Length: 93
Image (cartoon, rainbow, N blue to C red):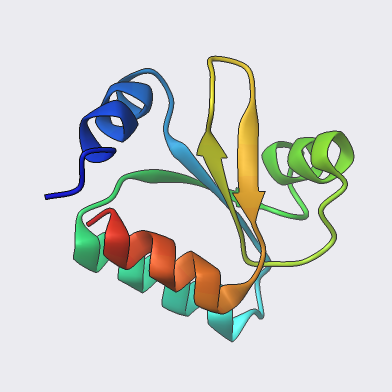
């Protein structure tokens, strides 16, 4: 059992993961499917809509998919590497 999981669960009660996506991104579609299959809730933030633009501007992320993970009530860390995103999903399913 992963001892960090309870802490992660507590953070997710206050904030959800955010997934920065683009319309034609095949990796974005795969990440969304992996999150759904793992039962992990998230908010999709399309890069061409307000929620996605806010993430791009605030965190200077210029690639999709990007998974934003809550660290505090107002702060996120993010993963942009596709393999690392999948690894995170599988470790936290």
